[in-house]
Image 1 (cartoon, rainbow, N blue to C red):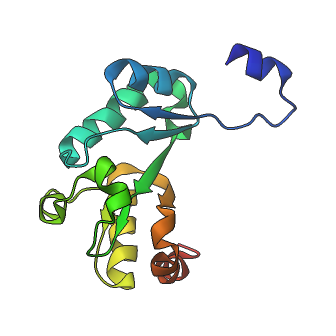
Image 2 (cartoon, rainbow, N blue to C red; image 1 turned 30 degrees about the vertical axis):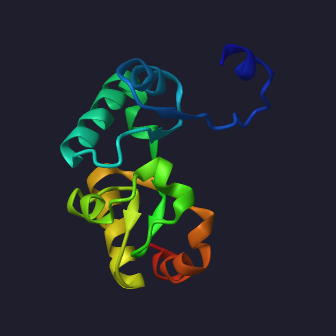
Length: 146
């Protein structure tokens, strides 16, 4: 990081760190501008909130400037075989856990769910698996300007 910062221009490139374990969460808090949480697909929301708190504590004075990334891997009612290694094949369990990796329902319900997750966890970035880009496009339209 020091080497990167030494050669940057006046506008530093934002640094994104995927953080799973305690050490990487502390590192992300100290160094990252954007954090994506590498957590179990069935992680409880309380556990995710605790991870974010750990990152914010490690960030100290800069915690208000740290942004969080939401990685949506499944959109809708089917789990494509390509993503089974990432989230498993039990959509019922993912839905029951309110997995952050899954969005279901109408475009309006999905937009509302993203807003709820933003309010709960502070996500400012959302990425969606490329397999669902067309299905997700109406959600983007609903979220535009929010």
